[in-house]
Amino acid sequence: MKKQFIAAALAVMVSSSLLITGCSSSNTETKASKTSVTFEAETEPASGQVIFEEDTQTVTAGSSEASASDSTSSGTEINDSDIFTDRDLLQEADTSEAETIEVADNEDITISEAGTYIITGTAENATIIVEAADDAKVQLVLDNVSITNDDSPAIYVKSADKVFVTTAEGSDNTLSVTGTFTADGDTNTDAVIFSKDDLVLNGLGTLTINSTDHGIAAKDDFKATGGTWIINAEGKGIDVNDSVSICGGTFTITAGGDGIHCENDEDLTVGSVYISGGTFDIDAGSDGIQATTTLTINGGNINISAEEGLESTSVTINDGTIYIEASDDGINASDKSTAVDILIEFHGGDTTIVMGQGDTDAVDSNGYIYVYDGTITITGMSAFDYERGGAIYGGTVTVNGSQVTEMTTQMMGGGMMGGRMGGQFGQGQMPEDGTMPEMPEGGFGGRGQMPGGRR
Image 1 (cartoon, rainbow, N blue to C red):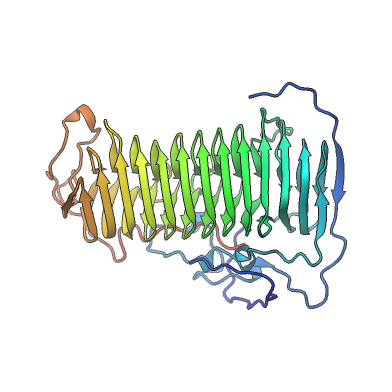
Image 2: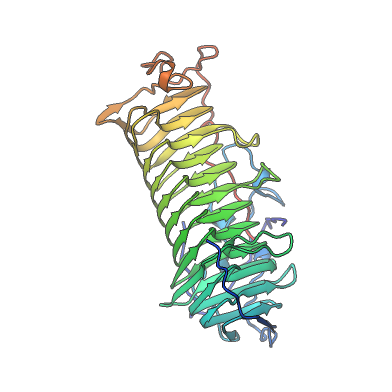
């Protein structure tokens, strides 16, 4: 979908009752036949009621249009106001004219109109289906709802402009799929919450997701600004195509695959992850957080135990508290996309990396590694491994208890290739010609890439 930036921001008045949080195995049992009920919004908004049209609330980013693929390594800084709309940030939905839906066993509910819908009750083999117009914004308020399905998503967004999944204040909700997912025609529905369009998570309650495959899948852009989310998935915890943007919320993710994964197989110029807040406790069988193009951390508390902690083509850490225990690479920059430079940059934050034994690297880049600021504490056999260049320009870097001011690297290929280079290339010199790359203002690759813009 097209992401638009409008040059002027529209001031929106909201009711004082709305809270805004700032963000700087197969089951072979025979299943009873399902019925289907369709819900439409019963009333039009009352005169004077605030209508959230996110495309008219955006803030200029220096051009009339911008998207993840438009950004380059030009030093562009990301601000939350460029990404999250006012409605994204509302943690309590306006339910004054909401429709209430109580789920029932073997009954699918189809929502076909824009509006706010309160979902409650307990059911087995029931799916909330959103199939609305391409410009419709639908808000699902989960209020102590529990759905357990054999083989289909609990929430399935077939079409809409944007869908909000909001947990009601104090609510405790559970969505589970216990068997093998069944495809919907050509669509491989493989997550408990499966969305073909933009998806936003927020709220003041808790949602627990249990899945035999992925926890949440979004085929467009994914945002989260609040709420408590507990995801137990045999596959990926959160699987997104185009962009992940998170500025708040508490996430506890246990995944057999990646904890958070953003990749579009059909377009390798997108697939970005941006985090500016929130609390994350990720235990993953593969990567903790993986992006295709850029992975930018501007804040938050992130605790990862995985094979690799953070992975992308470009990784930028500006702020936040990050703790990584990894058995392969702690932070890895590899050539996943040609749209951005291969590099890892530290501009701030407090990063601790504890590595397992063997041929492991705490910070590993197929391109460059630069440290400008922040605190980095590393325990492991190999602290840094780069192929093109690396340097420490500032900050505090401690390796196995000793502070270092020069970046040494393991020889290309590591392991049996000859151990440490001890500083042969000095502080960031390039092996190809022995010269130091010039440092542009604000860093080699800027302070991260722009994820999918405000919508």
